Length: 218
Image (tube, rainbow, N blue to C red; front, top):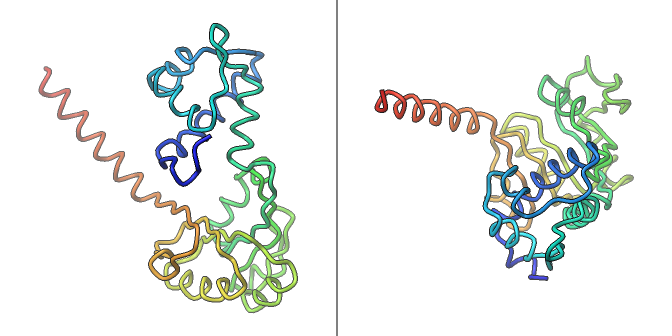
């Protein structure tokens, strides 16, 4: 198996897609799949599929292909979905409520143990069966429960202040929906940034590009 720091992020970012697809076909009763079939479904080449899995040792058998159950289990292990991370969510507004309500945290190896907001109307209510606490109680909570991961659903300026407090309690992992650039201030954090506006603008580009291509072909 290649060292993890030698594996490109493009490979890592394909693993959840593999996992999602394998979960779907396993639920449909499919027991095995070839690299060619998997590549067609993923819109990749068979060579790319094999190269991706060879980064982690390779899981197929020549002439047989891949066991769907085994491959799914291997990817689940690589992604660390069996290892429970203790997470807190910052911001229980519209975005935070949507993330908390619709994201299946537990199957992804994450336990949501705390939610925080500064809105007094929300404090003391529950979201996803978790009581919403005041951000004033953040240090006390972190000292007691030691969360690993913070989900940031707050504005940029609020995120900057909250991260400074969280960092002091050794919180180093972030799922960041704010526009705050954590890595610029903290070189040792692991952060996955989610910029929905960037995704929408990318879609706008693809729409414009497709419209232009269609107009030229007419």
